[in-house]
Length: 371
Length: 175
View 1 (cartoon, rainbow over the protein chains, first blue to last red):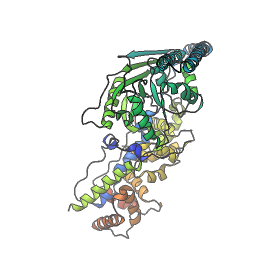
View 2 (cartoon, helix red, strand yellow):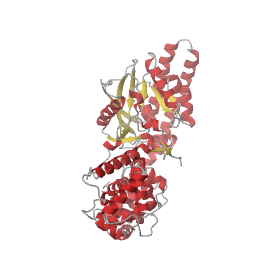
View 3 (cartoon, rainbow over the protein chains, first blue to last red):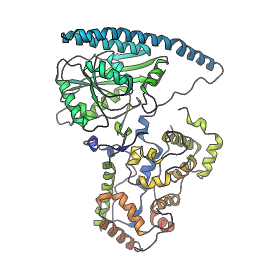
View 4 (cartoon, chains in turn blue, cyan):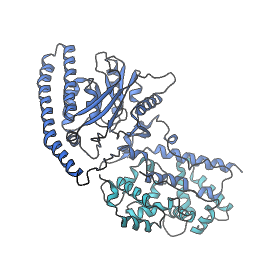
């Protein structure tokens, strides 16, 4: 599988203190003269370790919860079989047709517009935006997307970014259908990568590579440049940095919150009634994920455009990020966990272990002084 | 994928329960099985060290490497037996036995001065010097009536730690 290496310490700078969130009920501040017993008693540390083995909030974030089977009896099973026949035999081909039609229309309009209107930038961009919104609508139609948008639609103004919680790459399509955002995304291989380098490029999207730490400085610069430009499409950022299962939110990366502009939160909540929209990238490729959506009855979700937020005086970007995460989590009914999403790909930095060691060492040395 | 409990029959549950001396209820064993299958990503029948370390809360723990020696590669029955020391129903001597195993890294039934220094090193890292650790331990051993050359046996551990008792429990979630 993928090789895990200790995460870049840069990624952990200025993180909120994880120890504040983790259950530490077993660790009381010991008092009094130090005895042999206190040195040998490793039960609090062992309890924490065993607790993590039995259950931990990080793994919960990425657990796909398959729906309970409801069809195992004499009359429900044939009904379900009928449903399968309808979905795979009728709906799926119909949807493939609709999607193909959509692509044909899109491509036949996009390339002429892109090449012929090279001089009239403003008109070209307007048409390209409209076309991208169109193809996204076709995508949504191909899963019978039932999407309710709440709140005022995003407006095209400079010095603002949009942030949303992340469940799957279809989040981007669901939002793009309404507004042609520019996105910052991980570069993907395959046909998705091809789309990224051609069409999404023209929207003003920014690419990054998770595993390259030098990338961060370049990306931050590109973000700032984009946000300053008045003609650029509004920028959409998923600060979690990875797909989470739509029951929890992991910590937001501070990049989007230190650009010195307004942050407009968007909350997305999927209804799992027909299909679970969580894209577990370790279990499925994006193509399989799309096929799964296209053979389900419908994708149901709610999108809330929430009140724009600004950095409050005296607030650090990290506090700002946490505050916005709070707003989004409350609106979408998600639980917050104190983990960095990138821990999916790398081990925690030794800094956390060192903090525990330091606290224990200091307690021992302090109590040694007490006679 | 699919509900794990359907793969564990009533016989299996009872067998595992017996193996852990009835320290877990049947419901807890079912929950632990779901968790075991979740951590054992390719259904090999055991959880590898790498898979344990992919739980960040575990990887951050100072004693994770020592625990891994005891828990790496266990099948489900032994996994439950290992965790049974953390059950609320386990007796204090049973818990102390696990603590003893952590210290006794060469499994010879004796814990030496050096064994304790090693564990202390894991717990304090670079925040105490070797000299400080040895001094503190020597002093405390002396005060408790032992010397640097003493071997501590399980009974010694029980005598030292069971005073005034030990709390080492985890809750198995009822998911």
